Amino acid sequence: MRHFGHIPPAVRDRLFHQQPTEFDADSPAQTLSAALGATLYSPATRPRLADDVIKQAGRGVVSMVLCLEDSIDDADVEAAEANLVRQFTDLAARGEDVPLLFVRVRQPDQIADLVDRLGPARDLLSGFVLPKFTEERGVPFLEALTAAEARSGRRLFAMPVLESPELLYLETRTATLTGIAHTVDKYRERVLALRLGVTDFCSAYGLRRTPDMTAYDVRIVTSVIADVVNVLGRSDGTGYTITGPVWEYFRAQERMFKPQLRRSPFLEGRAEELRNALIEHDLDGLLREIELDRANGLLGKTCIHPSHVLPVHALSVVSHEEFSDAQDILRPERGGGGVLRSAYTNKMNEVKPHRAWAERTLRRAEVFGVAKEDVGFVDLLTAGLAD
Image (cartoon, rainbow, N blue to C red; front, side, top):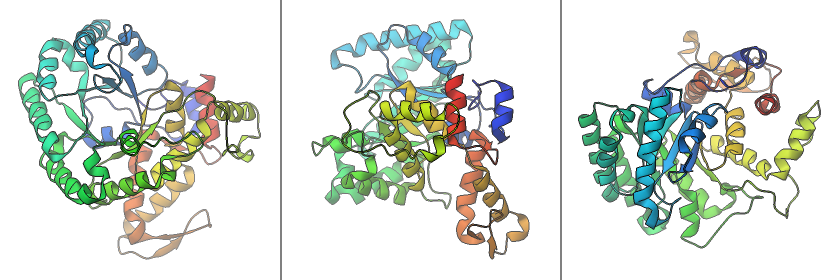
């Protein structure tokens, strides 16, 4: 699979200076963690789940979570597990390409049980999403995953979700973060990414942001994100990929504030139609939040609707300007440091302070590609929608 692999090669040639690389479920963890992109969640109760997975793969989805936790009723867990096994078996029999597939479980003992019940279809499973992760709750999950991996002979990744009240409350946050860091460090090879559960954070205070606001407009949420990145997202080799929070809106509602999308990037061809469509579906706020995710050290995003996938991926593509700056900073002859003017003559590139940014940018460029000099996110969005 590859990002934008669902659009025709001739269109990709027109859009990309450097094409997104191909990868699969057996690629190195560092590649997969950067490549997760828009991780689409789906309840495991869906009766045509196998069809849904294949359909979304054809639309550019490269990672999915099939959920046995909050997205389904407590009374439906047993039926959902049985459906999940049937759908995996169906997918395995079809032999078609599928995204990276993860299962969000409720309890540690579900991990071994599901891996056993999946049988040969477990080869389609990339790992498990672990809810409400703390040191106390996380250790049993990770021990169960490690045991299931050993028994099955299948590499399995964990994606802990950071969403517990202990992480939110100021008086317990530091100790909780320290415990989480200790736990995931012990199982580093199995932790693919850390996911933020912002909806649960808001729930603890009876809050819900509107489609005109991003997660970063809710100050109590912003403070948690900042602390999580501070402890777990460092660029010194100890950090993890941390994914952005879910955007929960996908239907038109009455707007209180004016649209956040400027007209200027959308003035050609179908672009004005695209702008109107994004505004009508409350996706202008999503675009702003994606930009703020990256500015705050997050990569990828939890998504609950297929319409969110393309915007996340389009804004994950590295611009030609970013790529040029990153390459200049990382040239071997720059190893001693120094300051240089950007090839775009609009900024200063300081080699030592910007090195970590440049390395992260080139990792993103590998999996999402580099846009041509005259190609922007509007072109990428339009091409994806046209397909």
